[in-house]
Image (cartoon, one colour):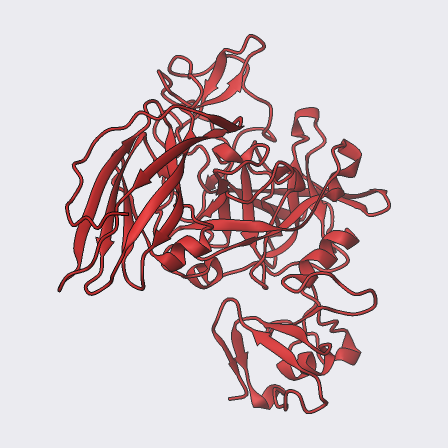
Length: 491
């Protein structure tokens, strides 16, 4: 490496594809070196360059060797949208050496070298290239709309901070924003199993997703604050038959954003989930909130438009609109609870869902409790839409055991406390599981196994309500975590 204190001239580079990755994006080998730079008395921009991949719908970078010291960073900026992300050495470690995702076909790079830091450099390895969206049809829509809705589309915009869009990885349909994920009390994310069968590492989740373009092309959330790397699948099932909907679920993890903040702390909200028994009656109100396709009314169409429905000849029938793959919610009646086979528990409800609401929470409106995971549509046949219930034992226990995992038969890996549980002492019905947490930390301390974890939900755990204990007095070691913060114990 040569020490170089000059700023490179911004240039445009056309990159040739060398490695198709998945149908929804490709990875192009791309080597760029910033040279090695020393800091001066003040912070400075030591290197600039523009990367252009003609025709790309979105871009991200993978870096190789680098040394960014303690305070130096790489700034990435989308030429088209102006969205920016600053990636430090720690951020690249959290993101597995990837940047966030940026709309458009050109990125500006700037290497910022902090004062006094020595031998700062960075090399790139790959550029991820999202394709342009499918060609859209003429303005308006066809005569035969898709039948994914339970009658008229009654979805409305939502700002629920617990629900995220999955985007940009090698999952079956999520590379174009094809699934929804959501947080529970231990910081885990849930989605449908068919959303992760193609692999999930390298994908992102997004919150605070902006409106799409009028012709339905999704826009990314802010790369600095609202994108988070998916760092792996904890557990999943994917049983690809209509009679095994209860076995279609996944539990996964997401790392911190470029600021080093976890989604739990940034969003500050989670779903409480139901235990063994939905306690639902015919007609009870159900809600589904997710990032589904939207074509009602049809979008503006035209060149490059997103298409929400193709006819048998591959021609676009209905163009997506500005609500496409943005957060929306809908309510409708509960229809029935099916138990088609052992470990196959299925919820049925007449609530509007479309493609990309796969993985959304199925919510009991009366208490805002999640009772399952939206899996597939059935309103086309008049049955209703379907979700996997938490009565499915493997799903329930996999959620319970995050983040410890590898449950030992007959033992609990993770124990939960939630001041809003109101289930009373253990003898009165608290199991300490995520679906039925203890209402005091003291009970959780008594219940937890040696070397295991206690997850504490936000709240005020007062001494007057029984939160008096000496952790480890019985010789057990334990870890107390509060993924969402805001837990005050013993005051």
